[in-house]
Length: 162
Image (cartoon, rainbow, N blue to C red):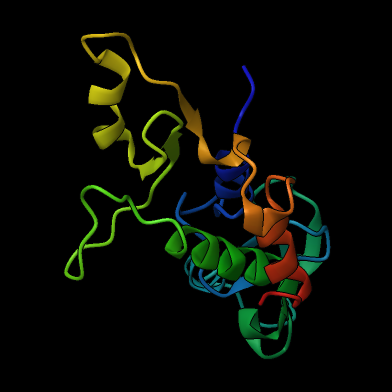
């Protein structure tokens, strides 16, 4: 089963401890990353200078002298998270998003040329005169992406966003 770019980015930006999007991602020497708060909770009783094991691979590392805050920030993960937010903010559902509530569009109804969330796309898939063509936004080239899905996100990651 092929995953969309959006779901792959969601997987990459998910902390293995809390299973939420990273908040202040920190890298261990083994290169696994976790939220700063999750690491502080996981190693709460450990003293600086003590040996600890990575929660994912069990490789040992020394807790920095200033605690978990002394671990390096994973700037690439943080940029990816920022790019994900910019990308999703650029695609509100054209049916149910409003000034009060933002709902992320995940698909495009090709017949109506509307960006839709999953819920709003359901009627388009069950039209009386035949289902509309509904495609994931990641699979639909747009004028702003120069025909390449994910280009906008890559521009943001590299700092070239408009």
